[in-house]
Length: 218
Image (tube, rainbow, N blue to C red; front, side, top):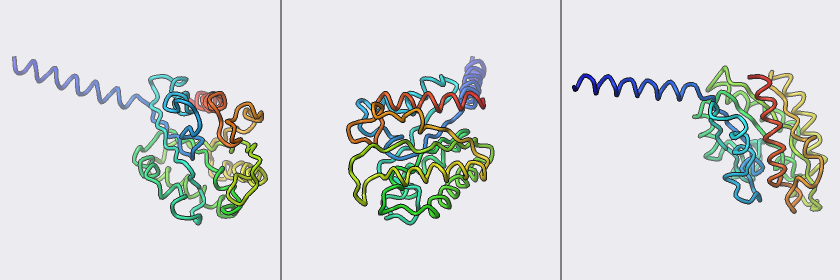
């Protein structure tokens, strides 16, 4: 009887481990846009959550968005993505797929430095490849900013435009997949009243766009 119980427990454990291995881990790395800022019921309507519903049970989606985070590592320490707890958590995940969307906070005139943005984004890509050399890295073009605020601490569309150019260059240099999440959100209707954060409809657009790219390379 004890032998039968032991055999059952071993079989159950092995089947559980196999099920976990089958799942493809997707790390969604980013700022408040990834986190789901301003989206009502963001835990269900953020783009990573919607992406998970599209991809299905064979994928495990993890939201590593962090409000106010920058890619540039010379910005004030509390703004740097690499100083946020989610950064360490995202590395520990050793994800099979890493989707990065950073640039909104970097575009603020007080932070912006195109040379640092390119160099530090490259370092971030290498960080994820160190923990999983086979990981597929996707770079998302920063979405538009429709804000009417033009201060040094506000997202700047001119700098975002430059960031998109730099990411196209970086994707080629680092052999990453580029996702155009900019074009599908070219209309202000996809944004919350602040003009910076996509609303639920905008998050849907992002999720669908990312989904298509992942499935294309599946």
